[in-house]
Image (tube, rainbow, N blue to C red; front, side, top):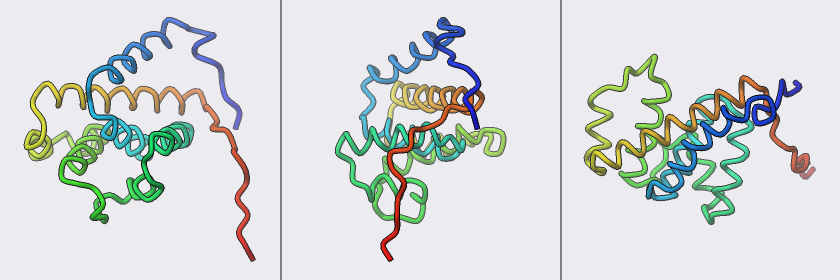
Length: 154
């Protein structure tokens, strides 16, 4: 699969607009651990290998363990994540899968147990922003780098 084109080259204003959202998210004061959870889980849900690769590497570089990163995909089955992290992950799933979930009040109320309205607005913007990035990466067929091919021990 070949990339289609470079959005920053073809339409730099579009890229700058999305970067504006990203800059807001990064400067919003949201705990970085929640940003990592949101970016990784949303990218997994959207099937964006480019973004999953990028954001898992960022999380690892930020000091999160391989276990913490790997189990995000199955967070509902793991006791690793605290209540606030679970509320964020659930909200990310609910907002990302809006056509199926319709973002029910129960998901909102669960998030509100842990965060004020302003924080919910920021978290929702973070979820929305990574959804934009995922859709752009998928539409443009961005390819993640291949670090090295894993070889299993015999």
